[in-house]
Image (cartoon, rainbow, N blue to C red; front, side):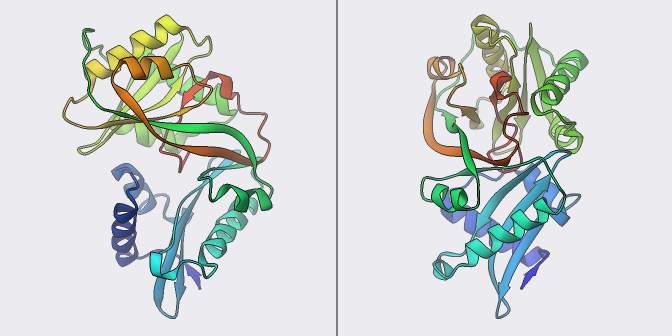
Length: 271
């Protein structure tokens, strides 16, 4: 049966994602066990945990993520059941678009359900960090710019997501480029990052200021679109591309203005 998760389910999930090498930020765990608990589905088979998936709905768009099935139970269609449960829950809310990131193995499965390829997501991870730039103070203007750009890019107010990210993150802006540094004890994430003009000078300086403000002892991860102009700056700053996935959409993939979005707000699971 498909049901809501329990605390023991989350313990199993944490063990599974660790075994798979997934990075699930603490903030996501907190949201999914709190205000977003209704966005989680667990499959139980013969009283045994058989997998979990999340399906987050914003105003106009939804995101499917964190789909995982224990290794001994794979190949029995459990993943498909969870995916369809997540998809059905979002479709019932009449959203304009539903998004996900897919591996090469998973992409054909999602294409059969009508999802189409939009772009490639590249994950970049810091190998070393140094910056000669002084640390820039975050300001209310930077926060306002980031929220305004997010609204302009997606055509919707993703308030619950941004409020949660900004609660523990720091927004920075230079000219018309704005980005968020999410800070957790064991992980730092750069995103979302918006730049309507994609000015190379502004984005290079913005990255330098973010790195100057980051904790040098905590890993930094950023998920960028392959069309993003950040690649050369990340390489110069000591980042390395560690993997790729496919950004896919079902429904209206034209309304979001992805040309101004340089990086995602999450590691592919919530937008």
